Length: 106
Length: 120
Image 1 (cartoon, rainbow over the protein chains, first blue to last red):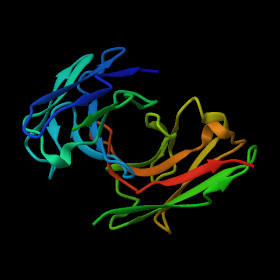
Image 2 (image 1 turned 90 degrees about the vertical axis):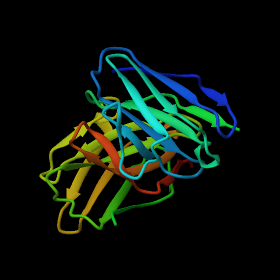
Image 3 (image 1 turned 90 degrees about the horizontal axis):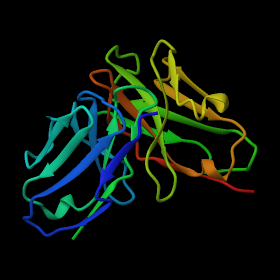
């Protein structure tokens, strides 16, 4: 299985901050990388697919980059509704696998 | 507006079979561009892909669960289902159903999830 590792596991930030979350794959996955946001008690929501393609309706302050094994999710100016847990997922091959999550806290 | 809704028992006894159904509304489960999948999340842990099904009945399973798992589709009811046999406490999780886009394989719509507890 392809292992996905996110860093950091938790992050404290303030409204207006720019933050970056990193996701590393145990082998090359080209650009088959997906980012989700999950709020407590809710299902995950798609943010970015194919490493850098923004899902329709997702604010432009979210962006993704990377290819191969190293990827990043950036939020350019944190808003109160962005405080949540973020997961990466590789979609290169089955079994699809997820990172352990990054909890973004105020 | 696409909606997915999981249904099934919230409590299953150890060694028994877990059965869940996902009802899809707002889109046809027979759409050629999508698969349909199950994902679970044990309390406090990361998401785990369980498996996926195409409207034709083709399935893809997580090898870690394959020996106990069956995923099926009922196009007449616009539903797909999961059965997991011989459950243990390790199968306690929130189970989500989701739509899987065949364009680089991402889950673009998720159900609200249902908590299944394995306990006697």
